[in-house]
Image (tube, rainbow, N blue to C red):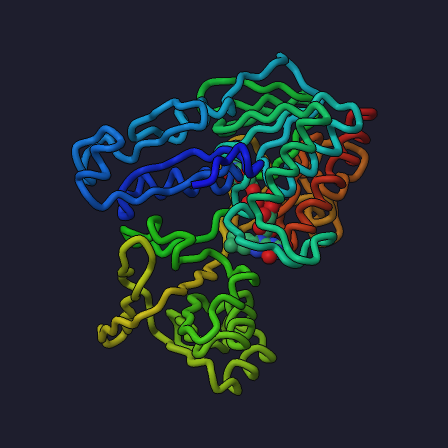
Length: 422
Ligand SMILES: Cc1cc2nc3c(=O)[nH]c(=O)nc-3n(C[C@H](O)[C@H](O)[C@H](O)COP(=O)(O)OP(=O)(O)OC[C@H]3O[C@@H](n4cnc5c(N)ncnc54)[C@H](O)[C@@H]3O)c2cc1C
């Protein structure tokens, strides 16, 4: 094998383990999203296992990670790996101008603009940079990247840019509670840390709903996809693709995949498409020879090894089951916003849990009861002055990277206005 130093390739973390190891998958997924180069070495024999100092491919010490500096870790947690990569740090200040929750397109954009415009900025991320967008293999509709860019690469660049301007990024820290007073927001993190800031931006996005099948997480990104990343479509040529969901996003995905795939099956729980889908999409779906719609149907089992190989569909009226080979299952079941903390903090949410901001706070053109100031709320401001929402977490937001980035930048402008006249 060529010396990585000579080829100018970044040195990779080597991960040794068995393909069906959930821990190994989690590590690969984590490193991929963080854009950390790694090499996956699958162990098949006792000899291979002994070469890296364990008894066999089923040894409990697997997976083993070996870092470029020679450090060896047996069955490490994500936190231990993050610590090793130097990604875990404590806040350097007792008070910030701007605290941002969520380090993805919206949060990182806010961090770049906030820090570059002189605000003492901290970003709190419950996982790591590269959350939702990090799961996208290629974002092709983001301005300035005609060849497309992977979500992980985009997140890595944004993280570097934000850090270069002086934003502090605290990873593997989760905001769980907030208290807001005029000119001061206090965020309580799951590990007990307290973050005080004069203005706060919530950019905590959404998590796509799951089927909640026992082995679902293991197939994430290797057969099971959340949302319908447009970029995946061209990889489905000649394959049979399944899209679960009856809403417009599922309908659009079905039509998109039908341009590439041999066959697209739309799986819906209810009667038919009429109640959930726009008429123009219904017309196209029904007219497409490559699309079939299975009503009253649910995905009840996933089968495969390290990748998805087949799914079981169950008719929820007759109980009849069929298992069909496929490598592609796209779940368009809508998103769940991360706003559990908002209720206790008196922050307005819509019926689906999204944060309501700006003009949407004014019911029927009137003034909202809980808005305390004479001035109207800024466009991205919640009903709590000084608390802003940007990106997918916001009621009415467009679920796109570019929109999230735009809202992150806008939220900083409004934060400036708030900071100059709280
Ligand atoms: C598979 C897939 C493919 C996609 N493809 C495209 C595409 O091609 N083009 C496009 O424009 N868009 C695409 N999207 C949509 C796009 O990724 C989202 O619109 C965008 O990521 C929204 O950014 P965001 O910053 O608002 O939220 P998110 O990306 O959801 O990020 C929110 C972040 O907040 C963190 N967080 C959540 N709760 C907390 C908490 N309590 N404390 C601290 N941190 C928290 C999360 O861990 C996450 O990192 C795709 C999405 C998916 C899932």
